[in-house]
Image 1 (cartoon, rainbow, N blue to C red):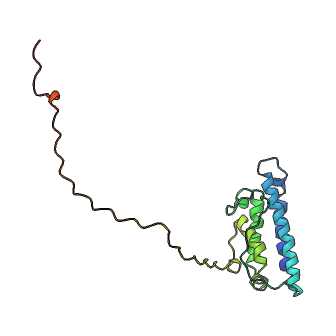
Image 2: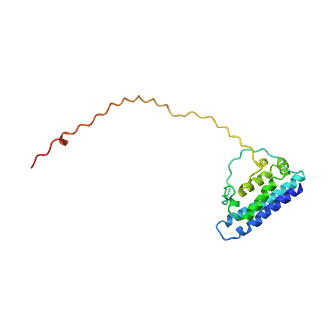
Image 3: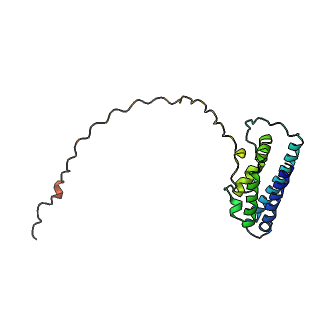
Length: 190
């Protein structure tokens, strides 16, 4: 099972190597590829550290999630949110490494590791999203509970009296011609 972290790190480093030409290219998307390159490299380091802590049984206890107040943060740099955006905008080298990652996620030892260290899902889910990999069932998050809606407050507006019923419409008659607009008489000859 020790090879699981080594294999995953090698695949992620391979994706970084395949992204290298895109990072160094002079194009408008080079900064985005540089961000992806950095994120994937950090994910490899984080996964290796998490795996080492799991092997030595020093994983921190899971904390229950708690509602947080929104914090003021510096604006994040633009990062695409579309599914499989990285695999769709690069060549076959990145997609080949992504298929290796998908194969590694379906490794028989991976569900056991993910069950005992669910923190790994936080590392792997964004990678699956940006590379367009179908996630195994062990990586899916449970559905969120819907927040309870507060009871509706009664409005303070006074109730209006109902409108009177409408009068029935009388049948419309043809308008009478005005006396100076008599078109039936012919003009007198001059």
